[in-house]
Image 1 (cartoon, rainbow, N blue to C red):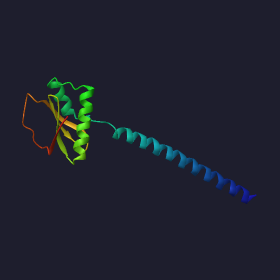
Image 2 (image 1 turned 45 degrees about the vertical axis):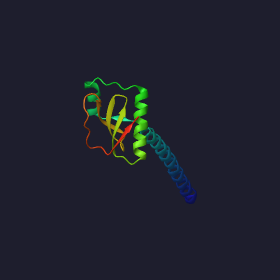
Image 3 (image 1 turned 90 degrees about the vertical axis):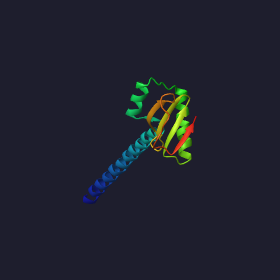
Image 4 (image 1 turned 135 degrees about the horizontal axis):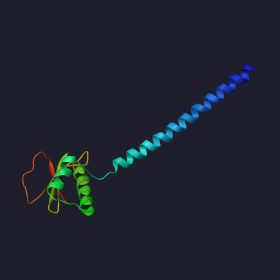
Length: 122
């Protein structure tokens, strides 16, 4: 009788462990999916860049943002860390690794750019 009760407890413990493993793998998959979706975000705009876009009345269309995303990918392929991305009449300084626009200006306003190690015209 004691052996059967012991076996029942061991069986229940194994079932609980298996259930936990299944729950943990589901949690891992969900985390992996969430991380993957975050990594696919094409481009981020820093608070500073968002303010500059607004202050300078610069509006980027979806097509222009797609071109910026493409430019960031090209800069990344060439090993550029901080890039000037020119799209139409807008100049964007971008941190390539984080895919973040740091600042944005109209090309007609200024023409000096510092702290970049490459430029992409898209």
